[in-house]
Amino acid sequence: MNQSPENQWPLSPALESQDHLQLEKSYGLFIDGEFVSSTGSKKYASINPATEQRLSRITESTPQDVDVAVRAARKGYDRHWSRMKPSERGKYLFRIARLIQERSRELAVLETLDGGKPIRESRDVDLPLAAAHFFYYAGWADKLDYAFPNRRPRPLGVAAQVIPWNFPLLMAAWKIAPALATGNTVVLKPAETTSLTALRLGEILQQAELPPGVVNIITGHGNVGKALVEHPGVDKVAFTGSTEVGKTIQASLAGTRKRSTLELGGKAANIIFADASIDQAVEGVINGIYFNQGQVCCAGSRLFVEESVAQQVIEKIKDRVQSLIIGNPLDKNTDLGAINSRQQLNTIQEYIDVGLAEGAIRYQPEAPLPDEGFWCRPTLFTQVSQASRIAREEIFGPVLAIQTFRTVAEVIQKANNTPYGLSAGVWTNKGSKIFNLSSQLRAGVVWANSYNQFDPTSPFGGYQESGFGREGGLHGLQAYLDIH
Ligand code: NAD
Image 1 (cartoon, protein in one colour):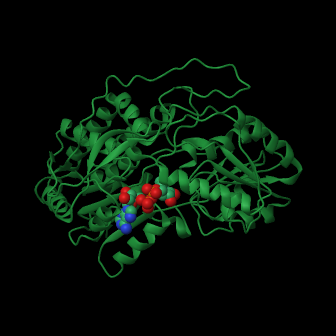
Image 2 (cartoon, rainbow, N blue to C red; image 1 turned 90 degrees about the vertical axis):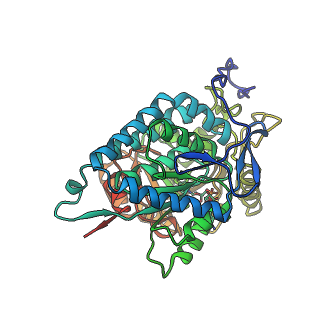
Image 3 (cartoon, rainbow, N blue to C red; image 1 turned 180 degrees about the horizontal axis):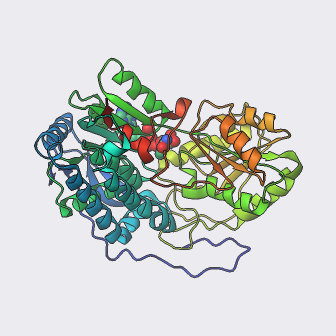
């Protein structure tokens, strides 16, 4: 049941049906165009974080499986993909994009079941954007000479791609679409807790009759990702995940000829000036931190409010948080779904305890939580200092740390006082302030009077410990090409 806040009329449940979704009891690996068994026998459960029920069993790949997948990708590159006319490669990408659209309801439901995010997000954000990435890069496949005029763009070869659990299918699309458009082949490893939509993508690739070996999908935990990125048959590593793992990958690639892009953590600053449209800004803050339960690399987890409007803004945020609906992610009314895993919930909880121990003031709505599953109430902290861990470290959960400022110089200094640099938001009615801040904030993307806006034409990526390299747009092509 959905848990409607006490001060609202209860909403009737509006459950998305899952009757059309068939799941196998257990899944193998997608290698060389086929679903195959592992050379080992280890499997683990993929569970629904909203119910703790097992959805299916996933294969833990062995080092031999990794080797077989990389060899299949090399064969796919040599025999098919590198020989194909770019316009033909583009047609496959268009086909995949259309199939994702056709099967978007099924994929959205599966994403929500496996990951815990509200169906509204899977349906309205993840799926349309995943298809849009394939459509966008399909268009580039035969225009690389125009993208890089008077240069000779060449594919790199086999790309090892490792992705996290917060946008499973969308991250797969971000990685696979530009790699294929530029003529590379792929071995993809989805996150251990959310492999089901990637495996379903394997079915779609079969349906699209993509030549064997062009995309291979192997599953398992971090050791599988490690074996993949360290495999000598790999030419390019594209990783999205935590800064901690990104650093170990970077160290392991040192001295090799492999190219790499790393999309890592973040601790974004969302900045509200007194001259902003306050209601619009509050809605942006709610979207920025509570969207996908705050499990977003670019989550606006630090809020800076100009002192003269701080009290007003905080009260409005509290009111809005009180009205958020937490519960069954398959219900179309749900605003906050389940946290992806017990482990992640424990991490978030530890940070909330740290915030309290550091003397910050916590606010959480009183909405009841479901009995089963992994849930965290939307949380905000006031009286947070710059030195506080909840203001410095990535929590990856629905926890907002609020600070105040008096001058533009002060807020720029505070916002940049972080080892990360992925994204930021600025709320003001002055264009000059927007230009000033967007040039001074050290963040890969700065949203102005909006937040969490994504488009395949727009590059995305970080500074400092948020990683390097860009995905999306023309820049996203560059990361998969040798350009002379
Ligand atoms: P994670 O680093 O624990 O895992 C990410 C992936 O790497 C998983 O598939 C995991 O199995 C694999 N992995 C783990 N250890 C590995 C190793 N030693 N070698 C190779 N692969 C390994 O991250 P997570 O907890 O799944 O995801 C959350 C993190 O991802 C957050 O820090 C978030 O900010 C970041 N993220 C960044 C972006 C971005 O675009 N910058 C997007 C989404 C998520």
